[in-house]
Each structure stands twice: as C-alpha cells, then as structure tokens.
Image 1 (cartoon, rainbow, N blue to C red):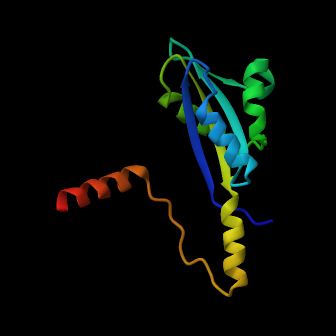
Image 2 (cartoon, rainbow, N blue to C red):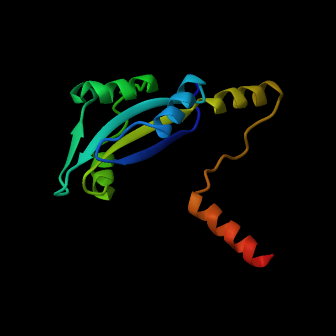
Length: 142
C-alpha cells in the first residue's frame, strides 16, 4: 500500500471550543480526500497545568459530533513520548487535538508522475518560519 507524506499537527483551543471554521476546513480536507487522519489524540491541560489524555469514547456527545466528520482512525502511531512532549507545550485551560494525517493528494500525483515515466527526486517540507524570514528578506532587498 502506498502512503503519502505524513504530518503531525497539534491544534490548541481555549477550553474545549473545537468548532467553527477550523473544523469545517478540516472536514472539507477529509471529505475531498486531500488528507486522511491516521491518528487523533485529545489532550486537556487544566488551569493548574496538569495534562490528561481523553479517549474519543470519553468525550462528551457534542465533542464527538464535532469530530465525527473527520473519520479519524485510531492507529496508536502517536506515542506516549509525543503526548508528553506536546502536553508541556500547551497553555493552561486548553484542549488540544494531536493529529497525524496523510497527504492523500500526493499519492495520486506520484502515481501520475510514475505513469508518465517520471520520478520524485526530492520532497522537503519548509517550515513556516523559514518562509516568513525569506519573504521579509526579499521585502528588505527590494
């Protein structure tokens, strides 16, 4: 089975406000088969800084209803070490979704490239900070 590039993202919300445009955009990405969520872990960091993991089955019905369209698989690929490291980065009184997702669009592109006799020579993710710095440097140069 071919896999596309896989990304880990963490979305943090004040209290547990997982709704609105962010969830609508994620749902669109999933329903349009641009990404597939391979794993999803929910974390809560309380006002004292204590972090707890919430299993999807432990979430309240409203939270489950909001997350259900994401069709997240629970694969166990997000490790305890990942969870501990991310928990330390969260702000107090927040809820976070740790998501491991596959870029499905890439699989089709790679297959089309292969069918045309081409090959992928390099694929590298450039961090947002590096792009922002390059744009600032260009603006200063001009």
